[in-house]
Amino acid sequence: MSSESGILIASIFLPLLLAPLSYFLGKRRGTSFVTWFTFGILVVSTILLVIPSLTISEQNPVYEESYTWSQFGNFGLKLDGFSTTFAVTIYVLSAVIAVFSREYMVRKIAGDFDNIEMSNHHSNNKINNNSDEEKLIKNASSHGGRGQVESLYSIEPSYKQHIDTQMGLYFALFLTFAMGMVGTVLSTNLIEFYVFFELMLVPAFFLIALYGYSTRKRVSLMFFFWTHVGAVLLLLGMLAMGLFAGGFDFETIKANVSKIPSQWMTLIVFAVVIGIAVKLGAFLLHIWIPHTYAESPTPISALIAGPMSAIGVYALLRIWIDLLAISYSDYSIYINFWGVITMIYGGAMALMQDDIKKLLAYSSISHMGYIIFGLGSQSMLGVTGSALMWIPHALGETILFLMAGSIILRTGTRSMSNLGGIARKMPYTATIAMIAVLTMIGVPPTSGFMAEWILFTGALQTGTENMDSFRVVLFSFAILTTILTSSYLLVMYKKIFFGKISPRFEKLRDVNRYAIIPMAFIASLTLFLGVYPDPIINPIIAYSEAIFSESPEIASLPTVTNLNTKIVVYADILPDEYERFLDGNHRNLHPIKEVKSIEIKENR
Image (cartoon, rainbow, N blue to C red; front, side, top):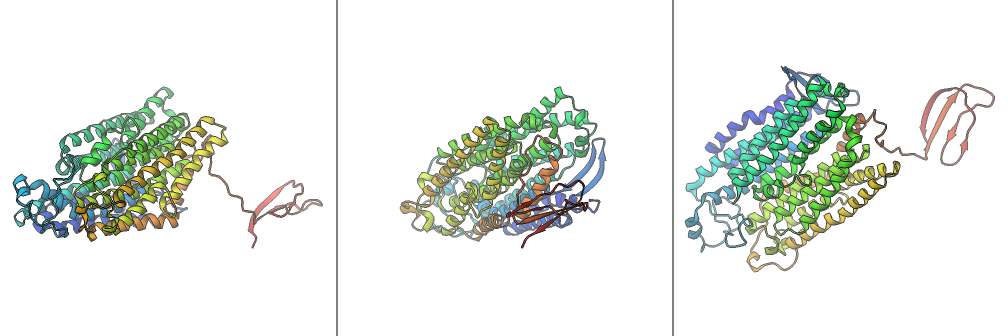
């Protein structure tokens, strides 16, 4: 259904338009006010997305707004079974992370503002783990080495204006970041897609450069260089697509994809896939991820690992598999292989880490490998599983990064060798973290189980139906990698929460509601989707079927035979022609010359 109501464009541009206001409100009204103001904007934007999505049905599978733009085509925003899931999840997770940022970023900004003399001035004061920002918190500068500690200092009343101003700027950039991600997902034009894609990177660069840790300037430049080079390569591929197809609108590309010369198709697919794979952090293009995740402020690490990872998954599906579907079967096996390598490499590197955030960075790389593996499965089921796999990845990674932030807030370290036994001191954090670990491993009743089962079933289906031994071997390695995933996640959990507790953590307390409630909300969401996955499964299955409806070389969705179903075939009444029955108990078959109608009845 096409509309010009403006509800989608309001959902997209509301955070951007109000971002400057959040800066001034933070400066004038303080940290708490701007936190809830940002949260409110993201909630309203989410509601504006949900309202038109309720009109989507089998009769009206799409809700779209389109506006005349320029010679490049139309400026359009589209909700369908695929984009709705991604866009809503991005806004929801962004809103939750905004709440978590309130306490964490106040401590972080205060620590950056304090100088060495202030640190020495409070070095002999009594440690207090209270969450109030006006009180002294633990100074952890003496624990761990450089890059291992996020030092927390006192917040003096005289610094309040500085902190409020910095928090206002932080949330202004935060809103722009969230807006760029959702705009990318809803775009219906290649140039529009690229504009939002780049708009997303600019606030992320400044969030890392201004609020990161010891090597933040170098890491922010690395992040911008890698992601921008990937974006430019993607742009070159998309420009070639549009020029050959005669337009840059998605529908124009799909209708005229056959006009792209075969010798150009390889170059276009290479540019598009490599450009997007940088965002995914696939093997060989992952260099920026461990440094960026480790040196970014933890809420931003969660935002990049969770919501922003959606963009790569979405782009690979929408730009390559959907728009260039005729090329999919030619290159899927290479993507399948690349996914397995990424899974194994990320998992092996995660197992060697002592820094929690670096372990989670390599974990993110490994889980992107799962998604890439499924996208190359050449199966509707495998592609569906990959699209679904992003949801538990985003939920699980977000919780675990927030867990890392909670531990840093209370202990001042992110080195697992300096932790241990804190489950009894931080029981809420430990319980929620276990739900996240089970989600990442794919254990029921979390959302990870269904997505992982569908993904691997689809990958095996292609190998067995086509008698492709290479795909079966890749499937075997991928299955074995799940053991590696379980290993590094469970080892991480054991090192942090079990074992003998250090004497310096005897007075440790769990984090406050600003940290617990966001983590608990995401944990409840992953359990809900694990028990009732229909809201995300059905729309994505319908989208996968639509992509490959005219691709016989793609393994179709398996059909389920119900033995309690009776098929009644009505035919012309001739002496030896009666109803044909097929059930679990008997077959009564007669030759039928002309079938008039078919009726399926359920035996009770």
